[in-house]
Amino acid sequence: MNKAAVIGTMLVLALAACGGTTSPVNAGTGSGTPGKTGGDVGGGNPGGTGGGSTEAWRVKGTAVDTQGRPLEGTQVWMLPAVHAGVVEVHTDAKGEYETPELTDEPYQAYAWQKVSYHNQTFCLRLAAATSEQYKVFSPRDGVIRNFRWQLSGVMPDANRDNAYFGAEVRLMNGYWDDTNAVPLTAVVEVTLVPDGPLIDGSAGKTIVKTTTYDDGFVYDVPVGHYQVTATEVRPDGTRVPLVLNPVSGPERYRATLDFKAITGPCGGYGGSNGVERAFIHIARP
Image (cartoon, rainbow, N blue to C red; front, side, top):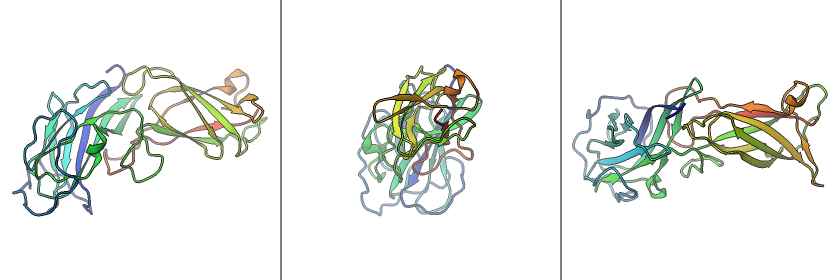
């Protein structure tokens, strides 16, 4: 996959209302006999494609990369409703997985992809194949939950604003000699030019985004290595290149941008995309 080596995906089938922390156990351990209590939660309709036909009390699905190719070795965690522990399974060479029988409880599915990029290991959350597949479900009639690696776009089920699959960048004032602070009301145009393949091995495209310094964020940037320039667009239309580092000469108006992986265990429940916030320091000349 060019310079981005896929290490493996972790997919979590999590109880929608499960509290506390559980410890992993071997696949097939503690699955028990599925309970027949509880109401329909979100329905058990398959939605999407792939993963084969449904089977009562089980969840099946697939995980694919940004080009639609199957991901082998996907790690699947399933948190049961009535006892502690985690049932763990993995996708096969076709990128398909299947859980053991589940109890009749509400679940929600999540997936993450481990990727090696620029001497780091990123744990990136995958997108559900359809908006329907973000919903809470009961496994009673069998369920399909498919996932795909998505470089950017809104994370629909996040519990915070401005949650994206792409990374975010914060603009900060650079307090260097012979420069001036950028005022809060300034309109700043940021241009990011990919310098090498993105994290999935694709070429990427030039990104131009406009924000105010007061807002201070550029959102939803596909993880990659970028060459950066920034321009202040003044009310009369004047465009003033901004200083991006303390060196002298033309290089002071350019910088590079890299992203760092969030450290710690892979996976979680909710709006983290697995990428630390990056920073661009700017100043008026």
